[in-house]
Length: 211
Image (cartoon, rainbow, N blue to C red):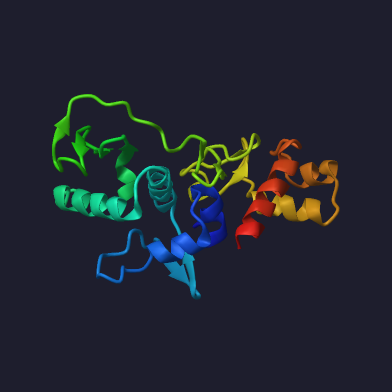
């Protein structure tokens, strides 16, 4: 299961407009920052790895210009050309002076100030946790965007579900919005916690607002 643009927007913190901009080459011919995993019936579909990578970009964007981020990603692709698979495999962190990446092999490389320099130790911030953008938008924690919603790459390929179940949020939200009460919904999906129903509705509203 893949992520639509609205769901990707809510989980990554990138606006639909930014997602569209980052899918395209720049006017100067630079490669797109991130092209989604698939496209079906004219709609772009993002993977779990795409969402993780986008969160890294949004996180870095709070202190670094988009030009510097594009340049850092291009540098990383050059440095890791033999092992490159996806940006999500690399953990990016911003500092006041530079952009640093933790590679899958455990190396920490400078991508901006002294490209290719290996660091022995650096404080790595987790872009999967909740963080706030410069505009004041609160980007939810990716693994638990709401108290009773979870996102895990091994459960429905990372599609948001009611916690401790495999029930997609939108199925529950639709039933609740149609007027079905919590007891009836739990009877249909006995694996869910009724407390997850309002969370499913809240998240569905966020997704609808991003559409």
